[in-house]
Image (cartoon, rainbow, N blue to C red; front, side, top):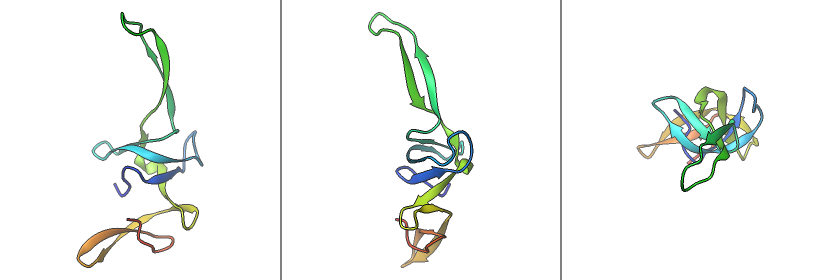
Length: 101
């Protein structure tokens, strides 16, 4: 996975197409991510002795292939590549060629 936690991504397909958000959690083994404010799911919590019943709205995981890194300099989604500088591997934006990290 070329994107990681705290990156800003744009959704490129699905019901939330066009939305942008920050990655809250990345799950590389499953190939899924959780994006802030995207793929909102409704969860019903049963009543217990200590807490009342409630309906929670929370983000669900989406496939990493359905998002692209959002380049704030180009103001557009872009692909990510890698380049070696000073013996160190850094991520670069394919659209602008600028370093991401």
